[in-house]
Length: 445
Image (tube, rainbow, N blue to C red):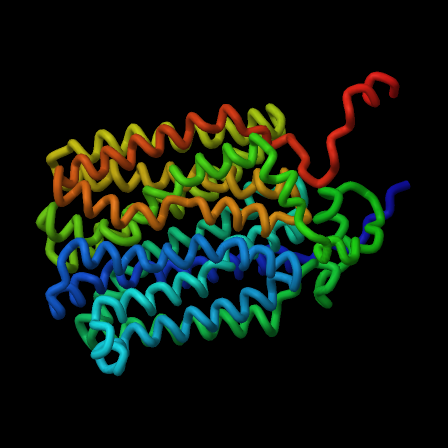
């Protein structure tokens, strides 16, 4: 006779929701300059290429400091790291509004001063995604990794959809400096929510009951959860095993290609709509939100599809199929959209292309957890270090200036297709947490 126990609590979904909101605020910190850049460029007469370098200053810090942020999450726990990093980037965001008044602007020049604080924002945001992956590994269990990490990147869509309209409204009523100050205040609120509510693991949270722990650890199997492994994250990440894996190198190369296109939407897309497509500032803000609406719609679908495909075809073919579907559609839509003359049709095609890029995205992060759940923050931070975001604003400005905006978007489509192709070398079924068994030993078992 089966005795029904208490219903599982749902704290895991609150933690996932916090990662969603954190990403939304992080995107607000990244995208606000992409919108306010027009006001700054007009006020201080910065050239297109100068703005490209200011945009890229974020990525020059964000990607190299990923590894340090991921290691810190594995070593000290994501709660502490997220609290500190969000406070850091919030202070740097507020400083963006003060740049013209700071003494350093007279010493270094305005462009360099904007770039330095943009660099510091990237430094602060670097730990966010790797530590969210660490939380998903701890809180969502083995069968919901794609769905769990997709909700983190759902925040990318939410932040991107709301930011252009909200930032433009604030800038038009109170000036572009106030928009930076409000972004900083919102980040500070999020930082304190991590400190006072979240925990690194479900067994540490006072509101999680045994039924939820069993659901997380065993996918609902009727087992009594044993004690959590202590000290696993205190060990040194298996860097040698990671860097000798063909799958890891495939992830790094393909993620460079995947990460290129989103930064076009974060930095140049609003300016492209206004200066190239001829939209007004307000219409540019409204249409600039459309790619992020499709990201909201397609990112959770991609996470669900990735987990479904894993259950149906296994980890290797399942994760591959999700990436091939998403990146293949994204490349085709980018190519067609860049050559479409009608503004409405072109923007919609480019917007859906952004959505399919994020349909594929959860599979990269879920694969990092598949390969090494214990050190998922370290591996995902290594992967995010290689993302092509730092390259996109500069390369887009270079191609657009010399060859045209159509060719700049064609190049993004080409990289998207290459990123999908590289997945033939990636095996999500591989384990990096235990040494491979010698073939001779296998034959004698």
